[in-house]
Amino acid sequence: QVQLVESGGGLVQPGGSLRLACAASRSIFNIAASMAWYRQAPGKQRELVAVIIRGGTTNYADSVKGRFTISRDNAKNTMYLQMNSLKPEDTAVYYCKALAPMSREYWGQGTQVTVSS
Figure 1: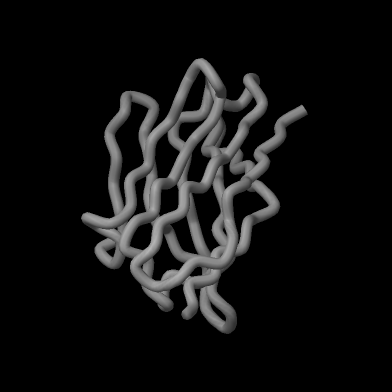
Figure 2: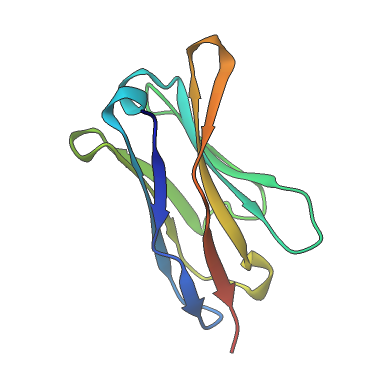
């Protein structure tokens, strides 16, 4: 059974940091062509934040470049999103996604990140 479970969200002040984790079942972590973080703020569409391709190439939304870092630990079947210099506009529910063969997508349940003083 494929599972993606996010953790690490919470309330942080502007300028602060959080590290999100996405624990994936081994079955999907080993075969996913890419894994990514998305976010959805209230009243807005879900948007891509960062993606890491199987070979390690990464890409980021312009709004988070230089502040966020995506990484993966293959030994732990876990993907991370290190978020620094957080801004109120980063407030959203953050989701992880795995893209499997045959273009199948798997999503986690999301974790809330709130940036507020």
